[in-house]
Image (cartoon, rainbow, N blue to C red; front, side):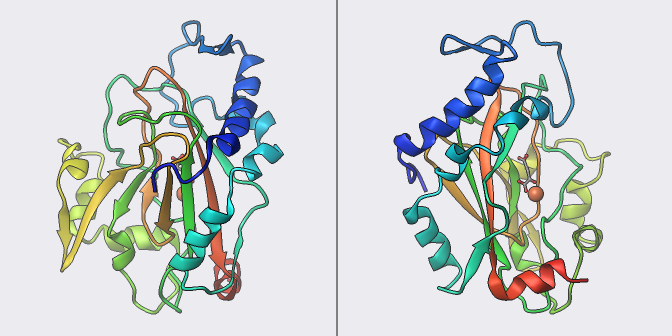
Length: 245
Ligand SMILES: O=C(O)CCC(=O)C(=O)O
Ligand SMILES: [Fe+2]
């Protein structure tokens, strides 16, 4: 949803990150100063830099009534709660010269549950512009429609089972070339259409993601850091199954 969060909620959160980066000389007088950074290809490059900001109340303030209303509707008016007190910072320094769809780190944050349906909704939003290639999270649209078997399946076993399908075997194999095709064209698993979607956007935009969707981190080929926030909302009656076992 474009522009769901008002600037007066987003700006203080953005500033909290900028202040943390200012202490490292990376943000100065309203501009990025990244020239002196050593080149890196670490997948979570710079994540430590914003750690001092992670308990800031400004991050919590980004969540509005309007956002929670959307989560409520998506979860059919059932009771849910946030998995953490404060949204989590997703931060990546520029860390790649060419952009690709990674073969690794694809995962689910919660297992598949016997109850079926969405166990919760994960929101993603942006504290600066995240352009294509700029490190936005990658999500396999349609993957929530697969493996709804009525069993509990841990994330790594979901991956193992998905890899039996040619689409996911190719996606998660280091030997697959031509990897841009995963974002450029849909694939098919049985009668389910799947496609990798890059979460790009502007401050205030929000993505709502079914927590059954396979996702991973992306390389950041932009000249600026990737600054996103995520928050996870879990259905009350699923929490025990998620954390039990
Ligand atoms: O850093 C990212 O873009 C992905 C992080 C992730 O897996 C998550 O927020 O659940
Ligand atoms: Fe995740």
